[in-house]
Image 1: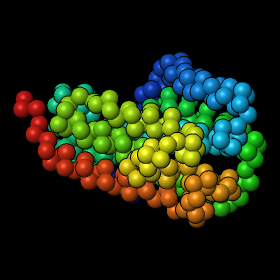
Image 2: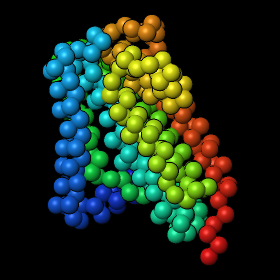
Image 3: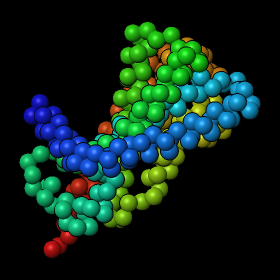
Length: 267
């Protein structure tokens, strides 16, 4: 409980610091809303031209889009510390200060800079979710609402795990490797469409290596009440978000190895 209170206090301090310049914070949030909105226009144009893609309608795809962008917006807001670990902490030696504080490293990094601008992406995703609820349509019941919250939590854990791995690599490279963007931004782009439209090898990659399908595709099918064209059982979507938490646990296991490898800057 002490750690939670500290985390909330650090988050509040970060947000207050950004709100000292309200115009800048508003413009950054608005830019995130508009930039992601361009992607929505592209998807709408695709379905306006072809009507459906392999039997998937725009309302159904909108649900996958909303879920994935909600997950990533929350994870990106919380994972800034891991993203800049190499450039702002390890290279400058500031990481030593974090080690000296009697608080968990992960908590300090997650609360380092909670980016208010990412709420622009979140608001845009929620707007798309409202559209999907009407266009699909989706029968929201207590069970499907609970499943949506569960899969979003699993997705936040998954994307946060990717950022933790990116930070872990910085213990050996210092630089933040762009390869991580393949699984963060690339994963967002891939996850906003049903996995059934992709090649088998790519589906396996996004199921067993980076389990994006487990936190978005299968729960999305359960929320829609639609059978999987690939033959997966319907109950899978109700438990598959657990893969996101397992991925985060493995990421933190690698993180602990990286912390033990750290040898300070020597100055």
